[in-house]
Image (cartoon, rainbow, N blue to C red; front, side, top):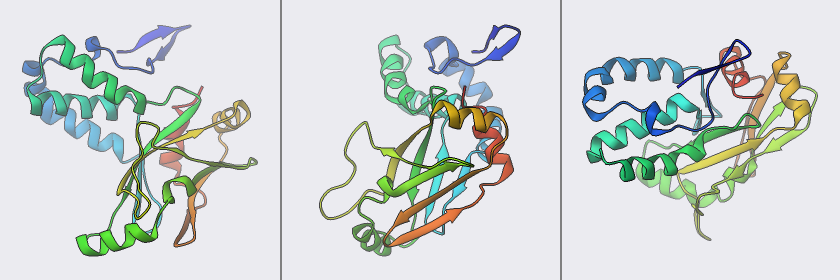
Length: 205
């Protein structure tokens, strides 16, 4: 739910129960809301090479995930709703960082299992770079360890922590690059598309 600060519309960095639709209301608006989220995500997705997709999360993408979980699980009691919010709120950037869901994607399941053994620590070699500044490597999977000694996971959660100087440059329109520097997977976008850059710029303060 937005509020006003010095005449500027501001979105808080965490969702509260008041920001969510009730199950009854969501059943009525779900189709329209889903279309809105799909359009929104088009400006927040990066394909880093052929097998890596990053979705940069924000309040809207996280709200959609929470609403869907509540719908599927038929959760309507306040304690259960808060549990879902506690699980998903950490995915929302706080104004000093970007947060992304990272998917390692291979259509063939056997090929995916094989490749995951060759991509250990790929999440730690994921980076962003603001024009004029050094690369920022991801802080990955802070909620739990998603890989073992033999293979990585096909899903990771990334946090890119940005310095005040980087954030100021982003607000001024600096180009943004991203990539993965892994011995078995090296790909970069330099720069990222302007529509994604503009969307990510709204995440930083």
